[in-house]
Every structure is written in C-alpha cells, then in structure tokens.
Length: 438
Image 1 (tube, rainbow, N blue to C red):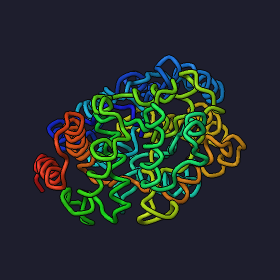
Image 2 (cartoon, one colour):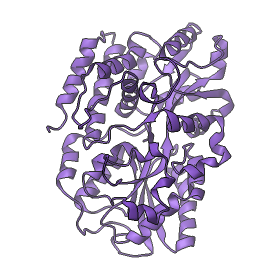
Image 3 (tube, rainbow, N blue to C red):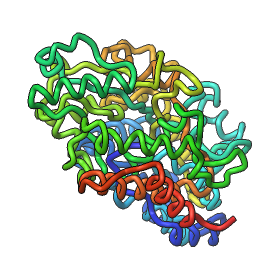
Image 4 (cartoon, rainbow, N blue to C red):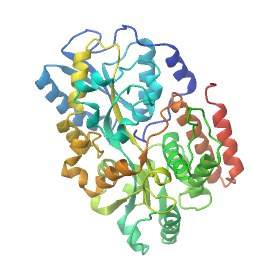
C-alpha cells in the first residue's frame, strides 16, 4: 500500500468491525441506495500527489466505462488518513460503496469482517481468470487457504532512489548494493555536507515496511506460522535495531527525520537536500515536485550481502492496492463489470503509467513504459525479491503497535538516548502486549 497513509486504526475499532458482520442485506450509500443497475459508487484511494490529481486521472476512465456499459460511477477519492476508518464503519453499518480500493496489507483484516465479496473461481472467471494476476500480488489478497477478499489493482515495490549529482560529487560511481555499502557511501556524502538518507521516523506504516523487510533478511518474521505475534524473536529485534541504527549509530539518517511523518523525506530528496531515498514507486511523486528523471537513479533496496532474491535476500514488501466489492451491493453485476474494466489490459496500462506503479496483470506489463529505468527495478523486484506482509486478521494492529514502537525508538535516537538490543526488545515486548488476546 502507499506509505503516505497514516497509521492504521487501533485494535478497538477493528475488533468492533470483526464482531459485527456486514453479510446481511444492508443498504449501501450512493449507487447501492437507489438500487440502480446504472449507477455505482466507488471509493478510490489517494494515489496521486493530491486528490485533485486522482480525479484528473480517474474521471476520464470512469466516463469511458459509462460509454461502454451505460453504468455511471460516482467517484470519491478518500485520503489514506481516513480510508481504513471509513471502510470499517461501512463494514459494521452496511452503509458503504459498491466498489472500493483497499491497501493490500489490510486484505486479511477486512476479509475477516465478512463484508467483502469473496473472489472464488466463479467470480474470477467473470473478470478473465485468476491466472492473469502476478503471484506476488495475489499473495496480498487475503488469508492463505481462503478465497481472496479483493483483486490486485496497482502493484508497487520499494527501491533505492539516489541523486546522481550528489553521488558524483562524493566520488561514488554506483549505488550501494548492501547495507554496509549504503552506510559507507552515506558517510562519504555527509563529508561533502549533504544529508545521506531520508526516513520518516514518525510514520508507523513506513517503519513497518522497512523492518518487515529487514526481518526477512535476518531470516525472521513478526508472526509465527499459525498467526501468533512474535515480536521479540532475535531476528525481529535485530531488524528493528538495524533500521533505527541508521540514525542512532551509523548517522546516515538525519536526527530531524525522527519527526517526519508523511512525504517529507520525498520532498527533501526531490529538492536535492538528501542523496538517497527508500520509497515505493516514487517517480510520479518526484515528478510532481519538479524533479527530473534524469537527475536520479533507481536501484534495488540493499540486502545484507549478495544480491536480491528470495528468502533472506527479500528487499521489498509486495506493496500495492487491491480493488474490492462490498458483499451487500445491490448492483453486483455492475460492480463485477467495473472490476473487470479496471483490471483489463488497457486500463491497467493507463492507470499504472499514471501512478508509476506496475500492473499486477502480467500481460499488461509488456508495455514498454514498464521497462523504463524508473519502473524496471520495481517490476523485477516484484517478480524476484518481494514478499507479502503477514496476511493475518490482526495485521492492522501490528502496523500500529510495532510501527509506533519504531517511532519511539527513532525519538530516542534523535534525543541522543541509547538504542540498545535490550531497549529495542523492551519496546517490541510492549507492542506485543497491545495485540488482541488469542
């Protein structure tokens, strides 16, 4: 999902959603409320630089769908800071849209509410089949062994963006491939008076994405195979410490970044203040802030040693956006036709180009645009070295609890307080205690 969204809603709200099933025949708002076969309501997530940009991207495509089908789509672009709460409220009340976007890490949590239409073999057949979608994208559509709760719409991956001029001025001829190289390069850049690496210490979602990847690189995870929280295992602790140590020990992340919460590190990079940025599908964001593609390079996120791949060489979460249908829609046929339209090859190329993301529909990836330098690294990462965040019911609480623990550790680092293995473990233990009891 986009890392510009705010922290996920807390355990109490999600528990309420899980307790109240929305499977019944409630009345949805917008398209559902008038039960019109010629109207749909669509909640889109904010993917562009602003809600206005999203409307500019989406409205022509929705009008195209109306010309093709006679079905009008009423669009609302919902900010990330509001989206999950809006969805959970709709799930509990039955008052929601017909079709909506969800962050792919929420798939299992929202699946457990019973509010979303399951995409079984029959439903997938109505949109062209399940085998059209990349395996890495399908892995983030719901709990293993269950019919997906949503369909992949946009796929994204993390990459290392680096300022070519700052690198050249520091005598660096290539981007770092390992974390040790990144730290060494960062020190050379700092000697030239530039900030080395941007981070968003107050953004729990960003924190989660990075420590999840580092945990994979340490051969660990934050949940046991049966879905129980395991935040204090050695690999998870090492992952969190390594990430926070980029500020606390290695000094390549500026202390002020401990207070960065949303898109500020991207702005610093776009304005040439910072030499490196770890971000997901950043090209459109950087362009909107005036940075030319020729000014930066894109490389895989570093690994501990060697090159990216599977297992401990994972270097990105399988980020992305899924499209879902509320089960109680009064226009199921129209909603399904809309999902088919949005995941068709033509629309996949148009929309993913606009958002600098990668089509999860593999046949759409043949477009030359997705072989360009800014996107080729993302495409290859998704194919070779990305992993889905845990598809567990309590995933959103995990993001809040552990993401906030990392935020607090960054605050310690910025204030000059020691960040030790023991202090990291203590924060993670506190986070685990905040998880719902099993």
